[in-house]
Image (cartoon, rainbow, N blue to C red; front, side, top):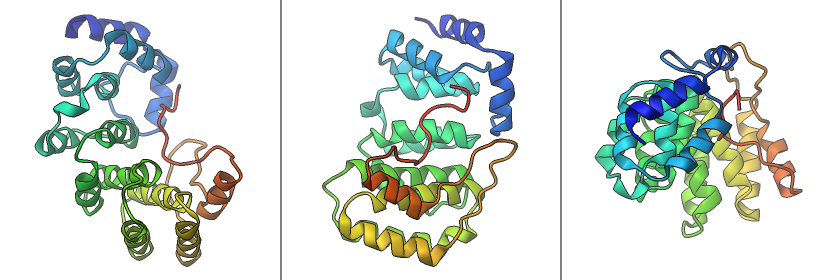
Length: 233
């Protein structure tokens, strides 16, 4: 499927209602307003196509960029490639989608550390999204790595940009469900932090309570971490 064909498909699948919902979540123009369910179906039809992904990302269109994260080849990304894509991040929704892709590359830990210290809101969000990814999926890391991240969260969370605070809170939850020892450390960190204020704009979204989310996860309830689907899906 060519770039032009994909863009035509995306435009046809977009809806005015989805564009309104996305805008309330801070997604800027240009966008078509395609649901993530439709994006996922189109991604499955396309398969892995790195050249197409590059063109979709370069388009600057929100829906095309989210699709790019689904059809890109993680093995084709070097550190500089990830940094180049990260410069185009324009909303927390796109940053969440990009974080899923970055988490599948060989550079996830390096970028978690580097972006987590970044001053920019979207890179900072991506960095802490990746810390959460590592906590949930990388069994090779020892507890000391995550204990250090908990101390960073306690020290910095209230002074970081809006969506970085949200991602740090998500990382705190993910670390807390990793194992029993880290659960105790995470709960103590949550007590020291207190409420985390995040502006979710004109939406019904709420910031998960870390201690409550860890307790629910322990009981087998669905985890409330960073979203992996669109607001309108």
